[in-house]
Image 1 (tube, each protein chain N blue to C red):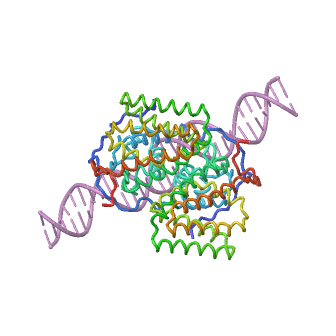
Image 2: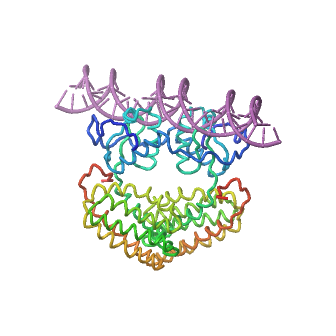
Image 3: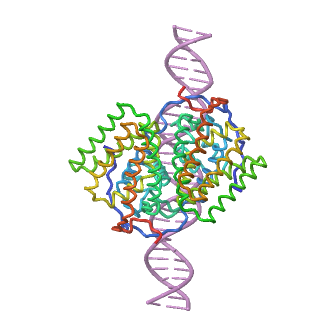
Length: 247
Length: 247
DNA sequence: ATTCATATATTAGTATATTAGTTGAGGAAG
DNA sequence: CTTCCTCAACTAATATACTAATATATGAAT
């Protein structure tokens, strides 16, 4: 079917399994990766708004580089669903796919029920103290009404639980999955009163982990994230042009 | 902190939120995507072996295209962890990260417990018949000792459950996550007797879905996937050079 | 023989040029 | 006034060319 060109299958002039270890720096400091990081931040923070066009050429000139690394960055963002590429036509900041949000939250809930349970199964004292410190930091941010710090502590709390569970990779996956939810919330949240509720929900999770009650930790995490699902349900169509709806 | 170059923030010469709908073809038939699909198949099927070098230039000539689309394909594969890029040095088929396999299976288990439970909650008769048909096809493949068909039916069974659960996107995510596990199994599986066991485990899952027992479906799926975890634990080091071990 | 410095070849990263598809405006035909 | 067609401008996709970093081979000095 596909016109796979001929070419020997394994024409390797060198040994098939090559030299074992290389320099330990798999792509960190390239221009492309810097641009990717910057652009991603602009997208999740909604500095670039859903539906807005993105010009490869313009970004290239603004960074003083060629279009190639910019393109590499944008392709990656396209895989994450943050931008949409229309061939020979244009690149646009993707609209928020409201229909997919519940699924993303369900995925997150499944995964975090697991990390919470496993964290409760084998948390060490030092790990628990760390989590408690993070929760305290969040409380301070709440008192200071510093939403940015609050959010940061929130993420660190959840990431910390994954870490304690012995599977930090799960949090990395969640970060990918929840990106559209984050954009949604950034648009629709004044929510100051919500902060203290969040802390009130975090507390029993940590308590269960501390006391080694896996099922309790799982349940507490589950109800915490179910609140999130409820929030989404109240679809506030303040800026309908930012959302992708099947009419 | 980050050296975001100057350039107006929203210099959009056109309306900030642009024209609504474009052609409905977001990148399917480009050379890059064809090459990506082909290469990915070669990687998961282990036609290209872990540790083996990959030459952009060689692939480009074999396809009769330039390095650019080849590079695009390889970058995507790099994001998926199927290849490793060492700057100015070379690209290599990634070794199988054995340390990460249990985590991948745990993720899969979490997610599929959810899809199984939700499928049992609201499966229609026609959906159940479809699942039963798939399971029957798998039984036939088992009888015929056709491993390829068996595997295909297996995937379709799990994908079908996700579909019935109302969240097909979850299966898409699982496909991403389990790629290294698949490579591992492809290397270490003669396993003919295993096939009938798999079917014996699928049966109670389907039965629970059919009878609308969510908790039963979840539990059946959980023990099914726990077997997978056990298989991995028996780390058979037949070809140690294919694996990435922290020694 | 072994080690170290150097040269050379190979590679990914980036820059620039070309190709080809899409859009939208403007004008001709109805 | 509406519809259709043509065309100009813009875009992503690809090709080609160049740069800089890395690795391996080579050869001299020890």
